[in-house]
Length: 123
Image 1 (cartoon, rainbow, N blue to C red):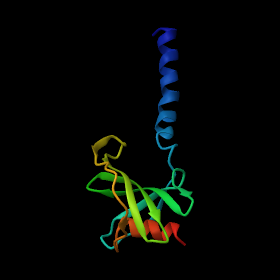
Image 2 (image 1 turned 90 degrees about the vertical axis):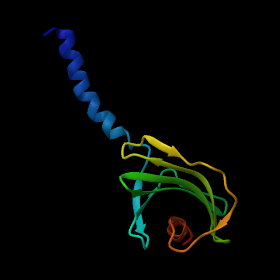
Image 3 (image 1 turned 180 degrees about the horizontal axis):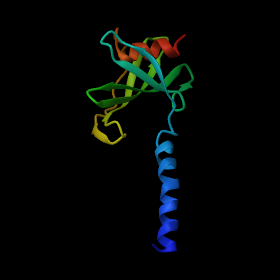
Image 4 (image 1 turned 45 degrees about the vertical axis):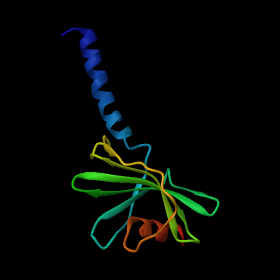
């Protein structure tokens, strides 16, 4: 075994765990609640933020071994939301379906992911 090969393999052994750890470094997912259907809802606290009186929320829920990820704007005073991004990804983050469509403001339905987000942000 050559020295170059040995150094390359040693470098890979060090780099692979770092790559695995860093794949979720851009997000800080915390569990919020589960809605009546029993689905767990998580929110990314690093990317979610307040803009004037509204909140832009990044959230996901796990269903059928896939994640439904959304980015939505929530208006606490009017109890409405506007969907900005919606996609389905696998457990590794690979996009399976991009359902993005800019929508108009809509009322927040009871027992929805948007209601859970509103309860979290609009305290």
